[in-house]
Image (cartoon, rainbow, N blue to C red; front, side, top):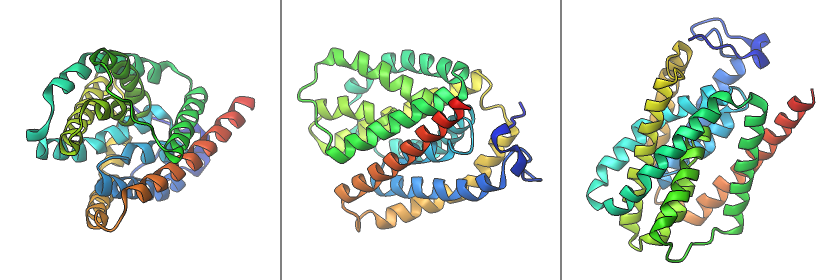
Length: 267
């Protein structure tokens, strides 16, 4: 399946990625490097940074499968390492609802026009960044049935934007008091979410793309460097400081995406 990016076609790069503009080839590795440095330092945040950043250059039908593919390595390794500490009962509560939500999200991703999708991503990213800056509030003692609406909504955002992790965390943090168990369970939930997305994107043909495969190979070294840097920086950074950094980047990215989408819709 050949992809064309008409909004940047005049800047097309010759080989080996004929459909990708030079600006995107320069910016994409830097965006991924920042995203996975944050992931290496905190255990989350790669998609929240990378998807909105790359959405300035590519449609979401390309960006989300691309970052889902790169996420698979980091998330699977983390989930495998922490598997002995997983609260499997809470994991099992979320999975059925996640599947329903991802089916809905994948359908929206394919059929939603590019500019409204970009606007929705911008609004979501800005709102979540502002929420983190204000200070997220923990849900106290969430009932088990809440796994269904949380799982469905998280699944929709996972497939549509690749950013369902924070939504799952709202539920899990209210059910699990032990930090190690929470980290392990959230890792396995996110890892499972990523692999379900990969299957959905493969079934819908979004992963059958030579340009996407070439971009994954281009970005993989920067992902590995970012993970290495993040692991080295882990003890030097405070959790609150990292949260504020992520939130600030999300708000800036979200506002610029909203402005870009509104301008395109008016044109």
